[in-house]
Image (cartoon, rainbow over all chains, first blue to last red; front, side, top):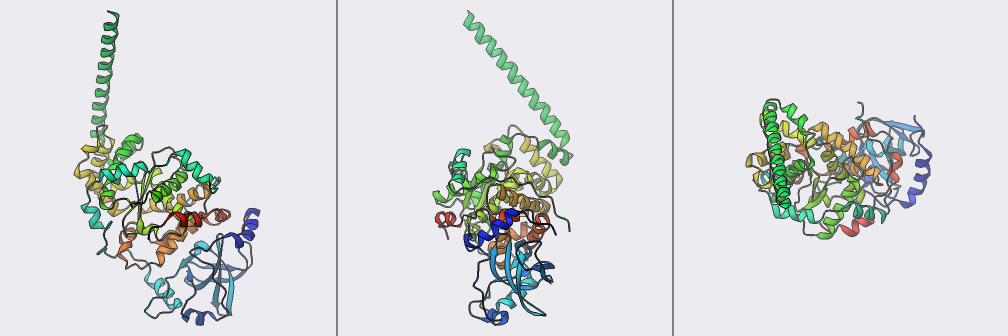
Length: 192
Length: 285
């Protein structure tokens, strides 16, 4: 495995303190077994791995692989740290904890009023997937029908132009955070 | 009189110039007419056309989308998306386009780009976002479509090569003015909005989006987090219908990003998410 640079290692240790809660929010560790926790009123945040992937002991690509998780394995999200997420998972050997890369996870829908547990819900989502074959009904604004019937609104176009930001303003906006430019080469298409 | 001489000379020069322009236009149109039978060649010709022409078409297209959903009445919000968007665009290959960004008042979850630098994001999508890095990811994806001129591809495919070529012909025509865009052209643009861009172009825009966000100092995983969120929303939700019809599934897009990015962007995950600035500015629900 390729070694990660020093930058990542140093930054990651500071990040635990610095990162606000994200979509993959930090969750307090639960002492309950995963199955019981999933059925509890406030279900833990669940996700699934999208392909076979190693579960690592630490958030680095050269850290020890504790397990290899099969595609669609459900995991409980504990903490996000940079490009990594700490998870809890049930394996044949019992409960295990480790780190997965953010991009190998699909988050699962929260448990609905149907009575499904977070875990069941996660599995249902995996089976159903996100199909695009639905029809927009009763939604105003930008359904197919709305776009088909739309006529150009030149007054709104003119209004849009009034909010434009020039380069100087954009640079000042970035500097106020501050946002700092980084050199990053474009990505090639990945190989299957 | 010397003055008259100068004036006459000036007029003659102006006439010469005018006829020169007219001849050039005639020749261009003739050439274009010959090319129309081969839409691919037209597209090739047009990728070199002026930004002004590209922007005329794009502004008509944007005006049509604004006809379906007007801008959200929130000046601070509109200024904010323009600041984030322009800052990102400064890190693209077309930093000096007349970029315009807007939040449009629709509950649908979607974002659109049109040629020449117009980017529109719906209120429905804005309310799904948690921080500025996620907004940056969405805007950067749209910026990539503009930078790479993905719409030309889509126009060609939209209604068969013949109408595609006709649309492109009008796009190329120097005389195309705001009032001269025909219903047919607008119809063609609507068709592209409904069919979506080439799927390969969508994946390319995702890859570019992560890089543009990273270059601009943001956590590049903003867009993946948005895709993970969309994946959790019900596929039965009508608000997502058009987005899902015109794009690969969020899962397929995440998968492609993982294959392309590997660990290359990991170090940049520590860059700004700017959740506080986002929360302080984005008040819409």
